[in-house]
Amino acid sequence: MKIAIAGAGAVGRSIARELLGNRHEVTLIERDPSHVEPDSVPGAEWVSGDACELSNLERAQLQQYDVVVAATGDDKANLVVALLAKTEFAVHRVVARVNDPRNEWLFDDDWGVDVAVSTPRILASLVEEAVSVGDLVRLLSFRQGQANLVEMTLPDDTPLAGRPVRKLELPRDAALVAILRGTRVIAPQPDDSVEGGDELVFVAPEEVEGDLKAAMRLD
Image 1 (cartoon, rainbow, N blue to C red):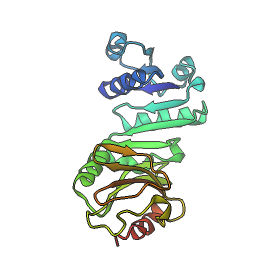
Image 2 (image 1 turned 30 degrees about the horizontal axis):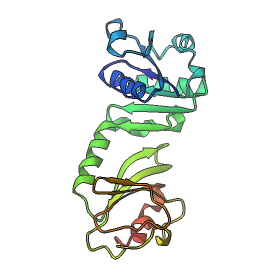
Image 3 (image 1 turned 45 degrees about the vertical axis):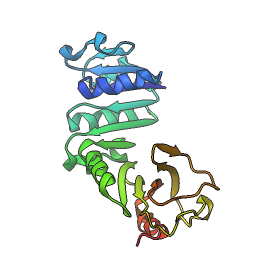
Image 4 (image 1 turned 90 degrees about the horizontal axis):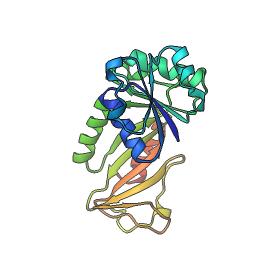
């Protein structure tokens, strides 16, 4: 994939290195000349200029990219980049960094954001995930709540132990996407069973989370 990253600070450069390591084509767009350091991210293309200015995005030929990541340290800038990427260049996927959780409500379809990533929220979710058994923990929201990545850890004495995935009565629109068992990551097949202590990862819209919890006999 071709991926453009607005903001080449520590976060933007780290994202770029990871993506390059996975063999994607990456371009960094950075307005601060002191942050334009090609040697710091070998293999990336660079565009020097403010990603909030349409002319710089045209110069980067943003319409050719599959994904745009708005990763600056300024929420206002990230919203502008997201909106321009979606409305002016029809970029298929726009991911935006949320620096201040109080601004998270703004990062939605109206601003061209497909996925909003709030570091404080993710860290809080990971803390909950580490200590919560028998409850739903929301890890990530896709398209601002239209679907969420949620996790639950089954109690050791769950009545579901040994039940095959095909017999789990999940609510409509909820999907089990992974079973984490010790060091194993299991892509669930219909005949795979769940066991006490399993971490189950689902994709589900917010409105069925209560039904999902009930279906797993956790209410």
